[in-house]
Image (cartoon, rainbow, N blue to C red; front, top):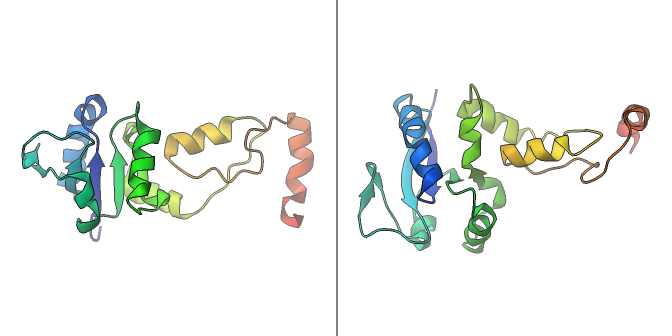
Length: 160
């Protein structure tokens, strides 16, 4: 693999603690590099688990490809705070992706960059997109269709 993806972790607590070893392992495989850790309230240390601990206002001066939100309970609020710093939504990822079996960063980033649209006759597509931290591009967002109606619609997608 080429250069590892550079990450900033945002959030300390339960999810952070449960994923530290996974992240350390991914670093050892040279898949990622954690360039910094931040949170809304940070302890008065310069490092945590060997990674630099920075104030959130210093994120823009730190090299990164993606920010990994390490707090599920405050995910939406953290995403809003990050975007207020001028960082694009597509560079903000949920830590729940680390729980996906056989997860690899290269496959995940390729999926994100594909701008795939999931067509489903119920909320399944939206749930998958939320779980993966992807934008939901489905024309069926929040719309339930019968399987029969979905099958009628699919051949006509290219004409819309």
